[in-house]
Amino acid sequence: MKKIQILGTGCAKCQKLTAVVDETAKALGLTYEIEKVTEIDRIMGFGVMSTPALVVDGVVKLAGKVPAIEDMKKLLD
Amino acid sequence: MNLLAPTTSIDPLLPNKPGTPAVIKYIGAGLVLAAAWWIVYSQLALAARWLTYRIFGLTEGTPLASAVEFFVFEVPKVLMLLGLVVFGVGIIRSYFTPDRTRAILAGKRESVGNVLAALLGVVTPFCSCSAVPLFIGFVTTGVPLGVTFSFLISAPMVNEIALVLLFGLFGWKVAALYMSTGLVIAILAGWIIGRLKLERHVEDWVYATKTGSSGLADEKAALTTRVAAGREAVRDIVGRVWIYVVLGIAVGAGIHGYVPTNAMAAIMGKGAWWSVPLAVLLGVPMYSNAAGIIPIVQALLGKGAALGTVLAFMMAVIGLSLPEAIILRKVLKLPLIFTFFSVVAAGIMVVGFLFNALF
Image (cartoon, rainbow over the protein chains, first blue to last red):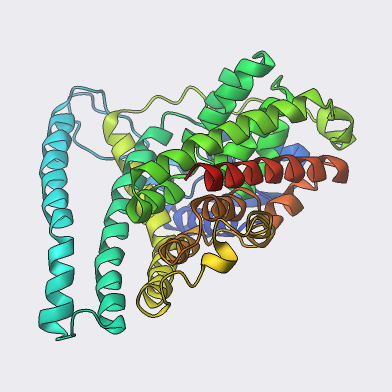
């Protein structure tokens, strides 16, 4: 079970990132759960200064951009 | 990963070692593309004339011909410049993550810090939607408040889209003026805010926030990764603003062809002192349509508007935005937001008056 967290305060790019994660995880056949982290103090706790950011199993993988699905595959694998 | 495999992938997430054949290939392709770009770019004026007078059969000297020629020349010109510069800036920005910028600024003395912050604001990727985490990340890890403001002022104001449009439509002098005065405003306004000791007007919980470390700061990437970042920037930014560029140039073309010369002299000319503060007041609520507004303003300049007034208007449009103020309200109390906007607006007005007096 992968724990995927999307950090962001609800911007348009955050929704896009969530969609890319969903699509990629389904394509890879992962079992996963997505949590959207919108509280600013929790986002800061990860040390992220540009949103949206992607956290997989507690590790920050990406900040401030939405990658293509091909690139997302490597981040989730 | 198989280390013997040819490292020609352009994968942004698996860095290639520099010095591989991919790099040589990229440089070769880059040179060919640059040459092609230049050949097309240098023929745009001729092509615009040919289209306007030969293909459309318009009569030289009529308002319609003048507007059409303006449009078919400026649209490809500005879009080509935008693509080139956004690509270059995308590559430069891949070297300056917010994390690295913060590491450079943390613990710097105020004066030096203000200058560095304003300069880094130009090259660090910034989106006003991330202004809050960035602000907290800066002030909780030892970047002084005034230095943080220098960054927050320069990052949106001195941006590549504004510079490209200014360069393309007004020439390098105006672009350079805009960039240098923008930097000076960011440095001075941040320094003044630092002197005013306004830390108590930052929301109390901000300084209590525990900022972690993302571990992304040490990301090393090869040239191929950075080229991919540049391409991504072009897709993202040009994809987003091209429509505003086209619309703005269309309106500008209309003004260019149909509005009589000197029509703007009375309301936006040098003689009207009140035009500078008015331009700033009008500019603040307008936001993120710099791409559309600059071509219009350029056309007005040709009709007798004064350069200082025009610069002040653009700086207010690009540098001060109400949405950003609303976003920052989360972390700043009203007196600080008010001070921030007043100091920057005053700086912009000084620039406006200065250039009206000088040119």
